[in-house]
Amino acid sequence: MNRVKKTLWCLVCIMSMIIITSCGSHRTTETGTAGTPAVTPGTGKIQTPGTGGQGVPPISEQVQKDNVTAKLDINVNDGSNDITVDGKLQMRRNVVVRVVITPLGLMEAGRLEFTPDYVLFIDRIHKQYVKERYDEVDMLKKNGITFQMIQEKFWSQYTKNHVALSLGKTSLDINIKKISYDTNVEPASEVSAKYERVTMKDALAKIAGM
Image (cartoon, rainbow, N blue to C red; front, side, top):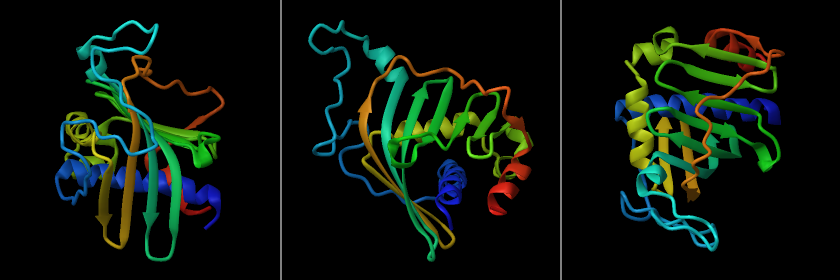
């Protein structure tokens, strides 16, 4: 499996992970206490709500709680492939949950974005994107997945350093680090006019056929 396909495959696995966690059928391993931001040694500090750095004005606790970003180390193993990529998590409460894949931290290969109204999947390798309602994506519709369910799971787990999930033979391990409260989280991603809009089924078929 080449690097490009590996990267996009990770995005597909993340989508599967979201279905698992939203349905409640998952196993979680954690370090730190739920509800308390945990910091992995050497990964930086989490800014305490209501405080700011030197020369930085304080940010209200509520604003911080409503805007969260974190770095991700994502590992996927299906028994024959073992892939690790870098990523980012960006969330604004009641507005967006976004996972961005950045191999080696140098470039963005794709992103998966959930808003109250639609799911956005951007494949930057093939310059294509999917923008569909939840009831238009089969894997989400069949499992009754909604934005509220996805948001609840991500917000309840983002302070945990390690989340481990499995789906059949595929296992997914996510290390969450460098959590911060970034008020500049974009409410919605813009897609270049050069990108082709396709269905989720067609997008996944192209990735599988690489």
